[in-house]
Image (cartoon, rainbow, N blue to C red; front, top):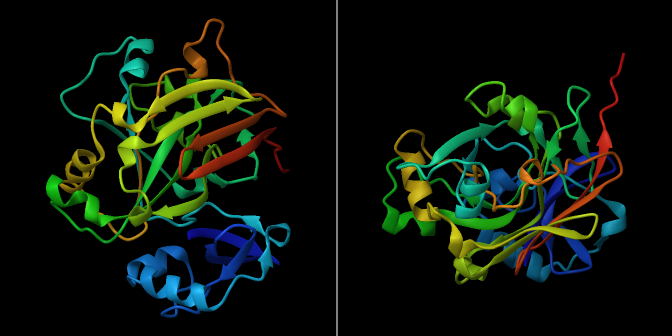
Amino acid sequence: MKFISFSIDSEPCYGTTTGSTITNLTNKVLGAKTLKELISREGISEAKKYASKNPGNINYSEIEFLPLIPDPGKIICVGLNYHEHVVETNRTIEENPVIFHRFPDSQTAHLQSIQRPQASTHLDYEGELAVIMGDAGSHVKEKDALKHIVGFSCYNDGSVRDWQQHTRQFGMGKNFQKTGSFGPHMVLAEDIPDYKALSLETRLNGRIMQSAKLSQLIFDIPLLISYVSKALPWRAGDVLVTGTPGGVGAKRKPPVFMRQGDKVEIEISDIGILSNQINDEIIQH
């Protein structure tokens, strides 16, 4: 059973899906209006029970996807977390993880457009595994970290490379509107017995650009959860984006940046495929 966020008739909703149809859970389990709220009320088990008794009757043709967690309190991203990516960027492995942040406004959803900004033509892809957290709080021990994960999803941590290089801080290049895609759904942690066995692939117009195993992470997920929790408490629906493999467009010769009409897909085994088309930003006057 997978969880999704979507809109129907312009109303934001969330629910579960087992394949071709969706069960709308909005306001039906513990009064939760959003997936984030359901997680905060520890309602996943109740939601599964409700959905099993109330098979879905909404077709995918009736909905528009929303970012899996449209309103996360924080999106914590990790840079330089695969050896090949460290090498291609001419960096060295640091003693501590490279951490930066995204804002919710920078997100878009499965089958929605990733927006190439007017300010740059250097829009790059970054396929990554996203971790959706429960209310773990502060100072989480590494040995306890995995039990605080609610589920996993796909993330395209789209980067505007020239703006990313304006300063030593990554922030501006990582937070252009609608450049980070999140979805299509959440697979529960209990349904992924070993996340290290997962594989990740990024395709641009059908061409494989990135390919890696999650076992190749330099800083493993329990360490990342513990490390961040020493500064900020993990709250329900917070998102950890775990890093991208080698093969990014900016480091290819010649560089490959995403353009109007391109199709980019992030596929993670046992989770799904996150798919987006690239469209140029239209400035409203």
